[in-house]
Structure formats: C-alpha cells, structure tokens
Image (cartoon, rainbow, N blue to C red; front, side):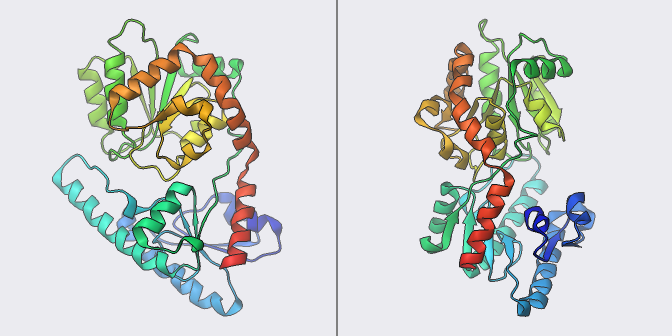
Length: 356
C-alpha cells in the first residue's frame, strides 16, 4: 500500500483493523478502519470481511484492482497468501476452554479460506512451499498460483559487524564473550516448536563445553508456563525470556545465531531478517524461507522439528565453527538485503495488473 501511495498516480484504499501512521498520512491513501471488538480476531474478522466487500462493490464499476489476504474477504480478485490454515493443524496446550476456542477459530478460518481462494483470479504465495500447499489442499489450478518472495528493510536489518554485535550485547547486559542464540516467535501454541528448542537447550546446558545462552523474543499464552519450567529445571540463568519486543532489529544484533525449528512455516520472516543481519539461522527444511538456502548452508536446515537431539547436534556443530557459518551466510545475506519491500511490491503490482 505504501508503494502504491508513493507513486502518486493511483488512488489507494486500505481496509484494515490497524494501519501504520505513514499510510494514514499519505494523501493518495484512504484508510478504512474496522473495529475489532475487545481486541478479538474472532469478533473482528467478520466486520473486516463485510467492510471489504462493501468497498469492493462500490469501487468495482471503476475497474478497481483488489488484493485480499487468505480468507479475510471473499471477493474475486487477487489473493495474497502467507499462511494456509488448511496446511497445518496447530498443537494447542493449556486449559480446555482455550483449546476449544482455538478449534472453533480454526474451523471458521478453514471455511473462510475455502470460500475465498477458489474465487481468486490469481493467488500470490510467499514461497514455493505455500504454493504447493494451496494447490494440494484447495485444488487451485497450478497456473493461477504465483510465488513472490518477501522483501525486507535493508536499513533496519543491515549487516551486523563485530563492533555492533558487542554494543548490542552490552545493551542487553551480556558478556561480549558469551555466545547468544535467539528464538523469535509467538508462544501461544507449539507451531514454532519452542518445546523442541527448550528440550535441546536443557540437554546442552548439562554439557561443560556448552557456553551459549538462549534469548527468547515473543509472548503468548504459554509464556508463563515456559518461564516456570525454566526455573524448575535450573535454566533461568541460561534461558532469558524477553517477552514481546518492538526493537527486534536491535536485539538481533546481539545474536550469534537464530533457531527456528517450526513445525509449519509458510515462509519465516524472522529467519529472513536474521539472515539480512548476517546471522546464521537454523530453520526447518520445510519452511518457505529455506528455499533461499544453498547447499553450503545445508547444515543449518532442521529435518525433524520434533527431534531435540537433531537440533542439539546442529547447534553444537554451529558453536564449534561460528565464524565459518557466518561466512557461509554472507552471499544469501547480501542477496536478501538487495531485495527491498519496494521490489516485492512492484512484482505484486505487476502480477495483479497482468492476471487479476
């Protein structure tokens, strides 16, 4: 939306629960804010779909080109998919009420996907993995589905040098000699496989030769339980929970590696951003972002997100050759930094204008 608005040649409408201030300030962009009662997605999403449909009906006679996301608005236009509910059933923990609510939300999201995606004139996916899931799970014709990878902000996620890394560790109150592994992800369910990360670190922390600590960035319903487990296991000095943070680029500067053994990951933007910063990222081989990994980075790919021993072994291999792994990721890091959000946006606009 920002890219379209910056050209000054198009009238842009954004239907959303919340928009960045720069969009609201752009003269070419009209933001149609939609309520989300009590901050609940379950209550807000029908209002969002209704508002989008109403605006589409009003603008369609003028030849509007529209982009929706997944099942959020069932209009026959371009559909940009960066998570497919039909491809993964989340593993939920916690009270029965929370699990029942999650099951209800999933059923609603599945129905919305099935209503919206088959109507789309073109489906844009964030990875080949997502495209394969869309074709396999929903029966969309392959020719209607296109892959456009994410971009990034090369300024916020610039390459970290040694001086920057030391300064970032100092800001966190960490010894400059202490290697840090970062985990960035929500702790509301087990999709990001933090349980595997925890088990791997529990094993590694019992070894005399393991000196790396874990920094956990993210919040969610399971965060208090993980903090309690870390205390009970005597790991509260080795695993530090930072909660939800808005300064992820700055935090990443302190990390020597990022770990992300997700059970389902349509793409994996935090891994992409870590690579932009020049940080080796261990990620599931099935994740969309892994499609950027050349053979020289194969040792960073996790083949079984449920296997804590595999993850521990890959972490040990990384720790024994930290500098070598940093050198291996540099070509990919440079390529990803060169692919800005504007590059991605231009490709999406061209795809929509051609096929939708």
